[in-house]
Image 1 (cartoon, rainbow, N blue to C red):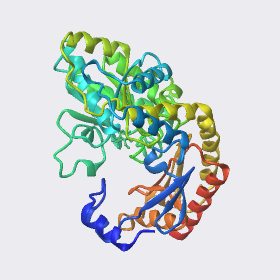
Image 2: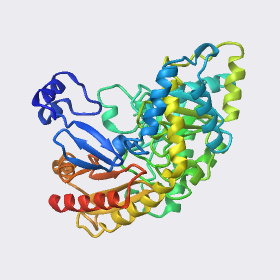
Image 3: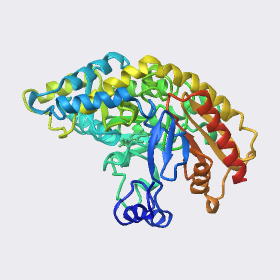
Image 4: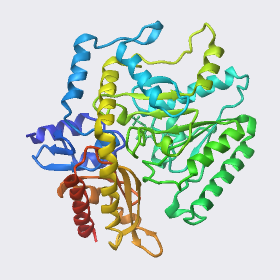
Length: 447
Ligand code: PLP
């Protein structure tokens, strides 16, 4: 049990990521104290179903002793080893090999980071190096998508297209460009999948023409736009965009920081989308949030150009904690759990989750229900026929989040009236049913 003094200490000293500092000072912190499976416990002893797996990351669920053991064993044996200077550790090497074995196509080269933002940041550096090595250093323009999220590093925040990651920071930079989101529920071309795909292809072509075909370095896409509001592009969209990038000789980066590691079903959403990108960025489910780690998957042809370009010189990119052995040991154990039944359970639970959310479609506030696997959202509207967003002054996100919490449910309530769901893959039927019942109760209280 925590006293008010902890709340005061938090208020005075802990700067919270992506928060209104003034709002937080008023509201105070909610503290979690323990967790098991898909259930988290707060400092008042309330048990909640974690419908968001922390921050879309605790894919395996909480309290796996085998993960704790793997980390403890590695800490005892070798808590740290650099991967600089030709050195290494067994778990990092083994994890790279296991991941390469499972990654789509020829994404055989793995560079480990500390999370998703620095994975995205690393791709920008690798891509610049790649085009220099190919003798085209003028290819320094990057394209991403409205409502996309690619982290909050200085360059990644510019590939991100959410306004509060830009305002006041002097980003995006003039080499960072956007095309419209393939957002079926709110798309000027309507909800037809083929029309959306054609519009995205035309938009990318037009953007490349405007910038100059020989200036564009890469295009970034999430298989499902997560932080933008769980926007699921039409089936075939990733394949079409990947194909166009190949035709235009632009590198294609699939940002799988959320969608990777079973979130949408398989280990990589790209497999379902039937594409092999030039890079995949991953994090979150890679270690299921137990310790920090991210990864950049690099295709053979990219790696060879970079390696030849550097020759005997060092490729000057790396961190003290790249390929950290404890994180890698956790990654290896988590991978075993995914393949030992968690992916399968996630698929089953995902079907129940989607069916449950669909059953809320008749609720007067629910405009849209969407998702894939254990990644889903409902979009709340003021008027269903006109798809009118909830009024700005009644932005419900904090109220709905608080209400859901009181009802024993953790969800993500986005500012635009979207409620996001990304429960642990270990959810039981009872967990999923509780998510749906508590959502329904929360919506009824919101009417
Ligand atoms: N890319 C995507 C698609 C993400 O969703 C996120 C985080 O949510 C990131 C990058 C950044 O990852 P991190 O928060 O681990 O830095």
